Length: 411
Ligand code: IZC
Ligand code: ZN
Image 1 (cartoon, protein in one colour):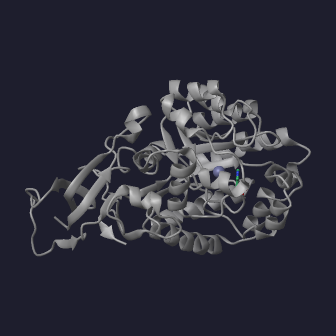
Image 2 (image 1 turned 60 degrees about the vertical axis):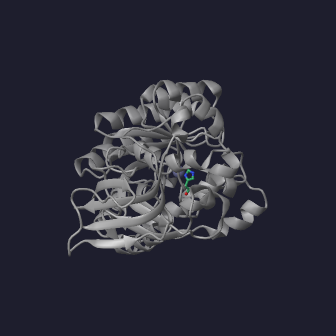
Image 3 (image 1 turned 180 degrees about the horizontal axis):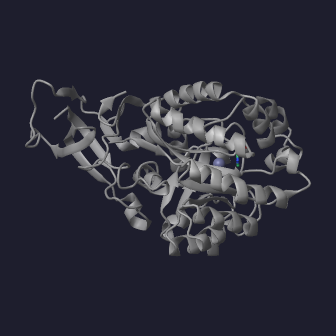
């Protein structure tokens, strides 16, 4: 064994290699007085008491006494817009004056402001900024994250953003899973020619991203005044032909049938869903689409919270993520999203734990390699300054992570 974690007061983890939905979302495994053995970066043993498995301990084994504290899987942040230039604190007065998020975008600001700043930032500066943000995420317990492009909005600039994500993936501990999101907004130079921009995405961006293998997923901001459900359907159907799996920003601000469209596409996930209709929720359940809910965005935009309980009751697998981005959720703190999911969605601590581990992993097609502490999975582990799971949902505002293990290494 390379690493042995002993004296774990409570080991709390979902179980399995698929998203958990309905009642099962809250059925986690809890082992008291647990032990975890790690070999070659993978979980090699999970047990309790003094039993440490057949592999045993030798001189090279690093043994860590967890002091009776709580251990969970590493957290999976399944929705972020990680790589971008600049920030948007200048929007704060507009927000306070009640100017709606989509009006800021319509006026040529918002996302388009970040596009301007991202285009004028070099690849190496974007890399350095991303690396600092990832270090902060890791401290909050995130061991895997998704990263969307969508602040380049030209072939060259989208590729630049995605290459930065790829380089970041190789140069720090967090695993980064990339999503191409050229359909995040229509850039200024196509303001009078939106169909021309959609053609550019389909004819130029998708083939370029696919040929450099820069993204596993393709996402579209399906929203009124941004991309319609019909346009989203067309773009994501083309993305599938290039081997990218569809995701969708759906029904965030206005109910326009986004959830239904995501289901029709067979998307792996539909994200936000604040305004998803009853039919939309049922369609997600029918097609096994993971609902990626983003409570920090509801908080930050002062919007309603998605109907997580209705989704769980309808058998939709729910994931929870930060939506980290410079506009509507400028926070990398996944613990804040967890607190809000519990208190505002009324999800139980066990349901939220599943939402930020196994179901998050399922939303980015990683449920077979991470998202739970089970033999054979990556040794991505969080030790908490807590003695039980409820405590981390009860306390808020502090970083309650004590130690993070990524691929078997203390980081
Ligand atoms: O930069 O505002 N919602 N896209 C869709 C965002 C938020 C990111 C942003
Ligand atoms: Zn987003």
